[in-house]
Length: 355
Image (cartoon, rainbow, N blue to C red):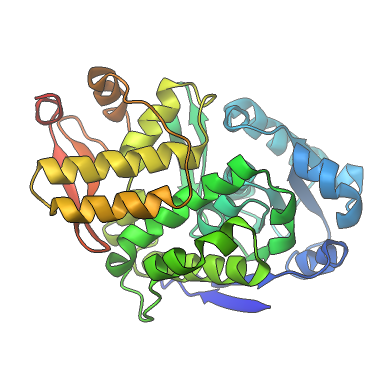
């Protein structure tokens, strides 16, 4: 078992990230050790409940089962979670527990942050994407018809408990969507300003076959590296005032793809990988990097054989990117590579991108 501690200066609640691979039937006791109130509500993915509900041991009356898919991260389900909490008469000393992927964590975290202005929140990520990224850092939210995560809050959990055994039943496509975020961290590592020299790109190059085979030690090390990088960023910039913006590498264009395809055709990680490729191409076009670095990046990305996404009409993509929460009235914001594992923020007008 590995423990990483998140210490955020602006928060009175610093918390542990626990990485383990113990039997899932023993997980309930560990989760409830952080839910110190008398009551709790578990928001759990439908798929996870079918696979692990019996082993986890929570009663049906303690669970809100959320259907799977990005489309479920909406106002309606947010309200249903709150209504369930009210009916259970949860107090501010009680807890909301999220067991599932990023969708479950985001909507449950947003509900926890707003119910009675905030109750205890515990994250139990069950996908690689949630393990390496969305469960850490306190971003919560729901989607609207205008775009992804446009309504949300920064709300740190009481604890994040990662059990790598959940990943054994993750299908290949969902596993690779997590690897999309892993690749993102490889290209921003030096900008994360982590005190440790983690060398994620080298780790990927040397261990990609074991990673794809879900070797337990390789997965544990991979998750640990990514979390250390994210924690380094979040501790320095909790609410995306400056440094944390680098975590959006690949996301401006990636979110536009998700919106353009109604969140149905591609996974988040697939869209982010396409966004990373777009960012490298844009950086070459703007003479920010040498073409050889782009070729190097292409080689790293190819190791995981991600799903290929076509180039959609740039005019339509630009309109969607202007709706991104990082955009303003005149500019679209991109995080672009400027050197090996180093990225910076750039702003472009619509005309800059079209011509």
